[in-house]
Amino acid sequence: MYFQPGESMTNTSLYALVTGASKGLGKAFALELAAMKKNLILVSLPGEGLEEQSKELRAEYGIDVVFYETDFLKNENIEKLGSWINENYSLEILINNAGIGGSCSFTETSAEYLETIIRLNIAAPTLLLHQLLPNLLQRDKAWVLNVASMACFTPIGFKTIYPASKRFLQHFSAGLREELRGTGVSISCVYPGPMKTNNTVSTRIERYGIWGRMILLTPQEVASKSIHKMFKNKKNIVLGWPNKIYRFMMTRFPPGLVLKVATRAVKKELIREKEQTP
Image (cartoon, rainbow, N blue to C red; front, side):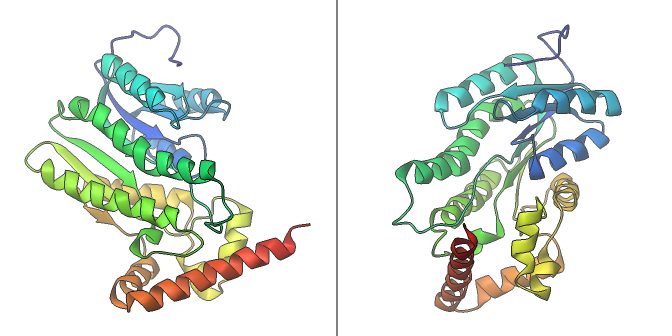
């Protein structure tokens, strides 16, 4: 646990919490909120440079930035984080971004890998929001953004657990949003498609040709548009018309056909990666 040296352990300012904040989309969310002059609580695994990132944001934007390093694979760590925040900070925004994906054969993968996806993509955001919801409900207006995926709109062989875990976030967000109707807390769910998180990912997606290049967004684009729509209380956030067309295809075409096409594409990608591995 870390906090800015010299700060009061009781803070009446409002804060935005971002999980998985050290890189990729989480880091982009942090930058976007910092530019909006939102005080930040950044969370990530230990050893991912979160302290230096917090110092830089604090210096550049003149906001308060505190950070907390922990591993969400252990439920007690989530409970400790939630208690620490509730005791010391007034929360107005929660961005549940931390998670993990990947493609592999279900029969060849390990039980540890499967449990990691389930814990990070399902258990962690659910338990954290359960811990922090009483804090958020104290605000006249507060926002929660759960990060799902375009993959949640169809099952996919050789991914299996990942789309299912993101489908959970979709249903969880919708149900809780309805349950909280009439309160000041708005629940939104964003469905990012492929992102330019690194050169390897960009190259892999661009192999799908013009369509792959059309749907590919930067984390900065996703973060900016997602936060903008979150503040407009949008229930479901799909970014860009190519992704909207993709969603339409996955939800309107025969489910069996979509499943076969998506599975075939992932299988080909896995075969290609194996062939390129020394």
